[in-house]
Amino acid sequence: EDRELFEKYSYLLGEGSCDMAFANIFCWAHLHNPEIAKWGSFIFIRFGGVDGKQHTYMEPIGEGDTIAAFNKLVEYVCEIKEPFKMAGVSANFAEKLRTSIPFCGYYLYPKRSQFDYIYNANQLRTLAGKKLQPKRNHINTFKKLYNFTTEPLSAAHKAEVLKLVEEWREGKENADLEAYECERRAIERGMDNFDAL
Image (cartoon, rainbow, N blue to C red):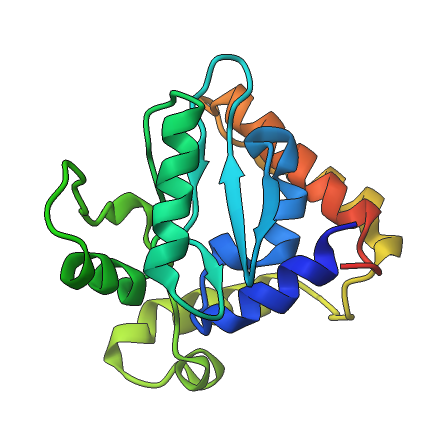
């Protein structure tokens, strides 16, 4: 129900982040328990709060004084007596915090394991250059080994997609079953809502 509101504001952020993709948040909701609140011309998004896990907040998104919105968020978290933790903060917002708020007990640090990986679309189309030779080799080997066709993915492929996910897991001897189940549920929810997403 909140998709339209979320997307109206998330597009204002102007930064491509998987954390700000509605489909991503929707499909992984079973794990992250997302919540959204509106305050003036901003929205606040938080995750967690289930099974004793503390909430994690995204940066305020909207038009106007972002630092005032941040201060409102901090005030709220203090009122509910929770530790204050943010994640997925954009470089622009981090810089605003650094330059607008004197040190007050908060630490901003990059968490490399949470970075998005972004590829140049033209490089992926052409796979030109020595650096991408291993990818070309994989593709050429695949073409030699398999008689294949391609078709656009659709909701009608749900059973095949889930079968592939199960086959992938069976091929992993030391697979983290809990992580696998979370991923399988996210994929299934995405396939169940394929057309809407």
